[in-house]
Length: 477
Image (cartoon, rainbow, N blue to C red; front, side, top):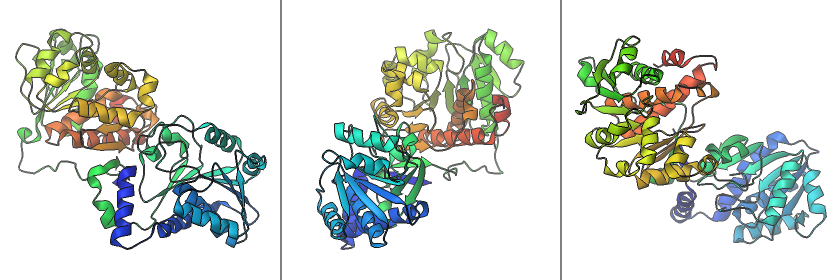
């Protein structure tokens, strides 16, 4: 499991490093420039023309420091800046670079600046780092456009300039071939829409001790990577079906039984002890002809008892008249998916009135309906939207898509597994069943959602786009 650190937390870690280890910020900048150089060195030749595009802050300082290293080794190096060096460390390496005979072109004042970028074999983007917020100004936009229009190989320093580190928002940004990331991943390195600007990610340690970073866990985004995060429930030999929980599923309608079938099959494969499928008689008759494992319950005024619930897969709008009663009556954790979310979008106060712990699993279009936004507005700010909704409604929010966001009021995760093989009808129903099973097995809602998303993504990686949802479900282990 890798940690993804917010910019304020990383800055606090740096300050603690300076104080506890009597270290200087200049040494940290030198370490960053050495890390950048170690990657850059793999992509340059002796005759390469290398252009550093530097801002006035510490990200620019990393660029000036690295330019010094290359100049001292005799490489053909020049710098294009958007404004004069400003921070103390940036100014120090700027002056050192000039003392080595280095050339600096101010983009807004020097006609040679554009050609300096376009004629370079390699461009190193050091305009903005993790402190960047908002949008690029006119000059910076022009610089970014020139970089992106060039044929140069582009390496970004920490984050591609123009991407917002903590939210992964972007309006215009450098399209890097490689991004050299210092200390820990940032949201813009792993989440869309900024992710597509990063190219290959190379993570480099620049000297902040692990014991300092470990103190920041409460402020970290946890990135779900190639592991199960040690949260898969253990199964004792001395057990029975009650040991592994009862999952009650209010799913399916007469013309949408597939959603209920997929969800239930996935939950069974994840090891839940017992499943109860609750629906109207017309739907149950069809589902019973396919599945033999669950208990089948015709919907009544009495809410079925269980350890966890899944509500909404394939119910269409046939349960709208009873969903509020069900949602407000249950007192065990619940996954609300599909038409359950569509119901909530028109009855948002129901979320506030529920006493059960709840997980919502919207895709971007459903999230847009929940918030009254456009899909593009949701996709442009996935992390912030997921986090705020989870806090406003005291829930776990699973915002689906490539790099699914899992947000609770106090924790956040970016799921790193997945593939386009999951882009088919029934995939979300499968995920809802998997998360529901982990809830019934006793995981807390955030961990159940995190594990479900990870396992769901791994199924996609193991499958071809030609595999059906049923074939994918058979691969659950």
